[in-house]
Image (cartoon, rainbow, N blue to C red; front, side, top):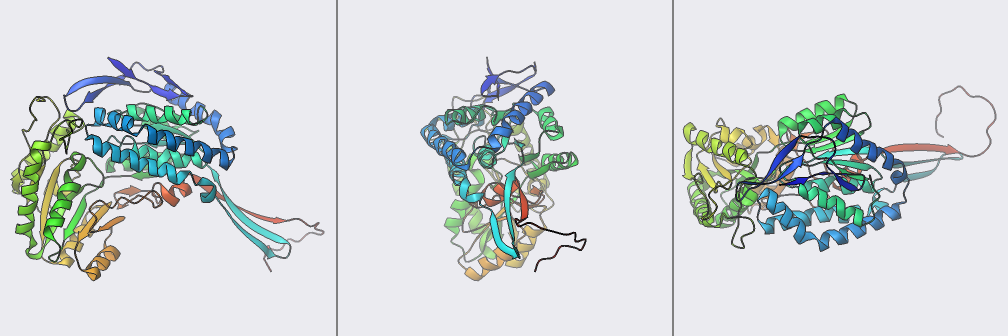
Length: 497
């Protein structure tokens, strides 16, 4: 049985802990490896390594950082298939989906390559006679990232390339469910020329998370995960005096108006609802059928959902369109929601329980599942299921649909399908959600914009990557300077003029 270690100070190490956790092959259900789980001494070692590296790295030139990032970008591109294979082996998503994840992470590195431009400050000459004013941004020091299982490459790369480009050092705590990809990312960054200690990978569970949040030498923490944990991370981190951005859960609605092309909308709902087995924070989990569209739309979604079942296969199978769920425990949790929805009276149109592809009876399988006539009091509507379960809710009018979305506790992503530009404009203006797609089912922003939701989908006021990522990982300093000799004492309040 292989052991997945930490990456500290430029080398793999198992540290001092004797605790481990199983890492599964989701397609077979077998244990593929064991990952070490950090104790306090391991956390202290990773942070001290980053703290030691922070002084010299923060003083490195912008051109040096940019040059290393460009080299890293090249290596990521060269090893993209290897990274995708690692993702599939531990997460279970199909290879094409894994490759797309690597590409979206790569785009953040490309954005960070422009750090000399992104860190340019402001300058005002002669704000008062002989006085100039200017501002610039400086790194925070040691920062931490706590990332989820569903995107073991993309989400860490939302964080550490920008943080490191800004002059910080970074301690990454990936999910213990699929930890191997983070090690490879760190090794490739070292190969690109990154000094030891600038990026450390600390394997672990909740203990490591809390230890990083409590550690006096960690200045900030970024988190992506469920809302209960995001709330905990934000509360504990800010109580310790840290800057925290904590992205939580989602219940993403896709509103379909009567004038929409229902074939296009059905394709989008199935693609966005079942891709990556629904284990995406931007997955569509609720379709809001407005007016008379419901019966026809549900019929179209149902036929496409049934057609998907034979292509639920191991992620390495060329015919696979959807793979297994990440663990047996998670599969059982998702299945329990299907049971609860049926018991609550929702119409189970397509049932994905008790499915397994031939030859893989022990994998963590649950095929695409569709409910109709779901009401807002049912758990399949209120809770983030994080699996291939799509719920259809009926709404009489546009206003009813908008009220439904705005009343939901989550505000991560949403989409509207319509040919009416005025309706789309009204929706994008009035909906209480952070990311909106107009005839786009998964409106994940490009790297040069920022990703983040509203309400219980975000704790803190700063989104990840893009310009807000640069802002989060730096702090501003304003300088007012005068150079001529000055004589005399003046106790009056300084004014400009």
